[in-house]
Length: 218
Image 1 (cartoon, rainbow, N blue to C red):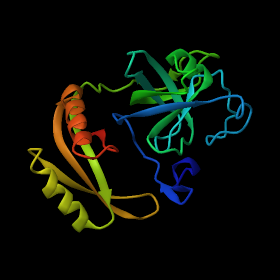
Image 2: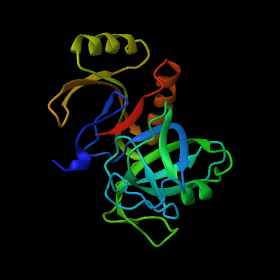
Image 3: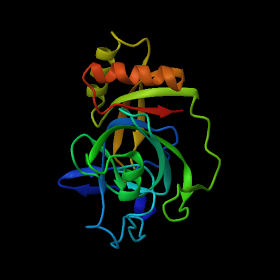
Image 4: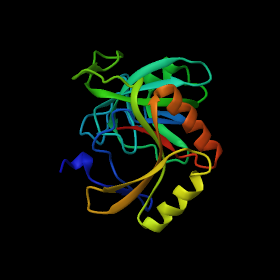
């Protein structure tokens, strides 16, 4: 197993990096980090360059290109994940200074965003977006599910499925084994045929009291 794909623990919380995140969608708060970390090693082994278009994410595979849309302005950028973090509640991505500058959030420090995982990428020229190493798949159409949670105890997953059955036509249980052998049961509503439908379902799920929900693609 690649070192970057192994589970890791920060402040008592264990995170399980995803093996394949294409189609992964999240909404939350973006932050940024700059000169304090400039020149230090990242989780990928690269040296952090705050003038590159990079970012830190807790579980997306390293080198994944991510489209980041600022929800209050509509401004979009593409960054490459080469580090882990941010380990702060409700924050879903930590941008480099250059990425934060292009998103217009240097002064505010944080901004509400929607992120979509794209293809695997490699560094572009300084200050330029990353370059794809493979063609990004079509995320606008397909089979999408909204995941509300994952449980080590299947009975808990069953109870959540019953609860969500009052709000969604179909809720499935998806068994999965983490890289370190932990058996989990994912609770997902769907399927939805396009990203607009999935995004509406995600908003509905959040309103039902599941703010950490996200979209996955089959």
